[in-house]
Length: 228
Ligand SMILES: *Cc1c(COP(=O)(O)O)cnc(C)c1O
Image (cartoon, rainbow, N blue to C red):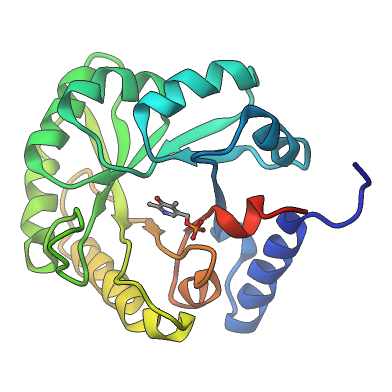
């Protein structure tokens, strides 16, 4: 394959351009390469371009695939639903879990991690209150954060959302803004041990709007792995 521009470079350039426009440090936005359904070969191509942070949405798929990639320099996040019986495996694979949405799940992760180190987690918030989507209801997020703060084996570091489907990136803005406001409110509550630095929001079609609204982790799959 030639060294012609890869989507990774154009996505990075677009993130940097948004940061320049809104006065953010580009280092404050991390690109999360969403590699679900992608083969080890496809993932290696992106890793060879310097991308080290990847995310999967299924524990099983990640467990089977990551050993085949055999690159210990890569860092893996979980962004999909986590069943309690998969927590033991998940905490061995992932360095951050974006999709924690209940006290029971947070407690299970804590129990598995407690003697080792706290697991960095994000609280998934269902901003659109869509019945088919996981996530804590926005009005419950603050109390949930207080409850999680008492669990020794997790460290709440921010919020994540998958907003209602939008045809236009601009339509996602109010949802991103809502998540950022919720993050600010939890931070302002000054809960011991909770530092809400991360906002995981924005995907292939709307990541620029998400960065404008404060995203620190943008989860990009199709735009990155699209045929180069
Ligand atoms: C698949 C997925 C993404 C990436 O979506 P694209 O539109 O392909 O960029 C982001 N977040 C989650 C939770 C996903 O499951």
